[in-house]
Image 1 (tube, rainbow, N blue to C red):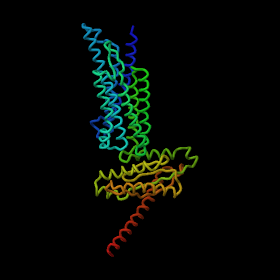
Image 2 (cartoon, rainbow, N blue to C red):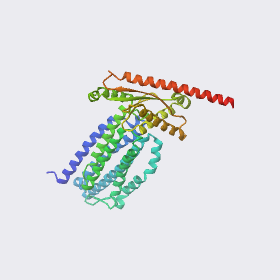
Image 3 (cartoon, rainbow, N blue to C red):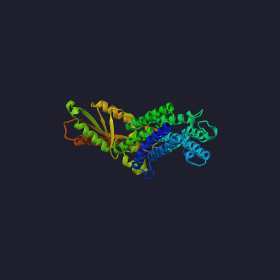
Image 4 (tube, rainbow, N blue to C red):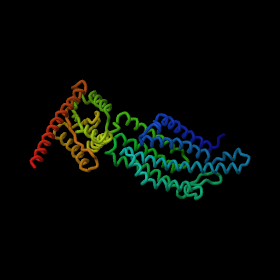
Length: 413
């Protein structure tokens, strides 16, 4: 007959093995860190590896806690008991360390997902590393101080007087990552908001359960659920988000317009939308004068402007090159002009900052589309393009006239 403690340990081990198999499958599907230059991919891989190791360690802590495995089969039972206690110590030190590191890496991942800046992540890592360093030192010295936990001579794990500090540090990192993304959500993509709660809520539930029921093998499983949510979000990003600008890509734009045009409810209502084609002025000159990496930065800044200023009712996608498409429910010309003025003002604000070597400005053209009245959206896109081209030609003519007058004034002086 299996003893109750052993049966409980085996049930926890089975839970950890289930999480482990899912994590290994996820790790096999995920691009190896060696094959990716993107920091978020590297950080996600580190979190996966920590979670996999966590499953092994949590299974070990449940297997060895209260058990006398070596003592039961070694001829020298006292020496075997010493092995059991020391192994239990090692498992729990590693267990706490992994939890702390996971929270710290998650916070860095959150920072990178917003700004995509490796330098920013490096700066923040130095700022926010203190709780991780202090907590790790407390855990690593615990075998001598017994502050965080202790293992009795009978191989029983018990909490120490400050066991809560490493747990608070880990959870604080998780909350920081969620709060950071949410507070900067206008700079982020909408698809990121749900996954950050998918990682915070399971871990919060797991922390509460762990607090109320010490020894319950739940942390590995909730971390696995959180990572699956992030992985699914990453796949959505790869499929539908333009990596450079952070808005939707051409593929998603096409799918969006097709589904909009085929929606029976929209057809019955005769829903009408406005499409705006936005084109960056002098983009070729930016590439020629400063290099393509600066041109990429200009596209990224336009994406930031769109995400920060369009609001929830409007849709933005990168059409190709330096062209973007905005879909809006606005129909009257004044509202559309006000929207474009808002975007222009945002570009002027960036230009006035003096941070960028280029100047951002736009040409645009808009057209309206009534759902169900056209077989496809090709005509809709062409009308936007034609109107944008007329606007651009007129704008170039105006610039040429202003340059001519300026030259005349200089000559006169």
